Image 1 (cartoon, rainbow, N blue to C red):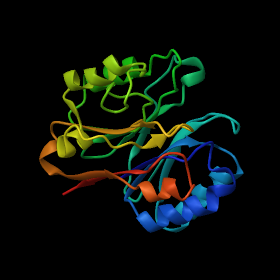
Image 2 (tube, rainbow, N blue to C red):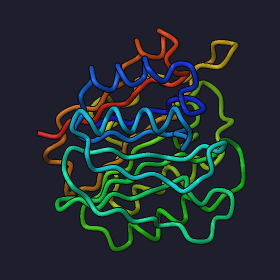
Image 3 (cartoon, rainbow, N blue to C red):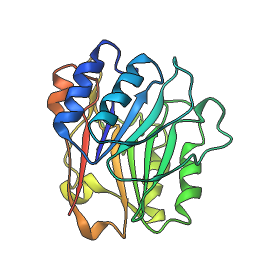
Image 4 (cartoon, rainbow, N blue to C red):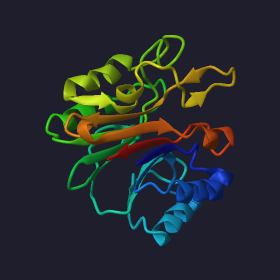
Length: 226
């Protein structure tokens, strides 16, 4: 599985982003900052043609960011949020037979109820995978400072039997998925898995060279299950 913030819908980078997605060849693809515009349509059509025939996205208009899921195996779409105003389409849920997959894009340093929406969903889940740009993390670990909003809510995912897959495998090492203009690193992009999935967790890592090549300001994140 792949999760990637493609930066404002991809823009002029969209063809290179499409090529990169083909190269990585994840069975399930989740994108943040996807846009329902011409570039987004080109991406969807290219994936469709190459076997990612099951797709869904939020309903945001073309100028706004939303999230997107494409899969080679079928799923049922659900839109968990119903009362989030301008953040309505920042979380979508693909219900697979074995687990529910959430692709998220939580806004940076803005007041929202997206974590609360996620917590309501997880109360009744048996197996779930949450991926995306959450724009938060653990202070002093996922960044050098302590400026994260929603860090408490981020850590409260443990109370819903969801574990940080990257930390399960790599402990508290510092590795960042986004850098500021002043070269300060932040791990904004995350993957959480429920306890039912933990026994088949194989790997969880970032592909930094796509960010370093300028295809986005975020590194793609990969989750592999055995």
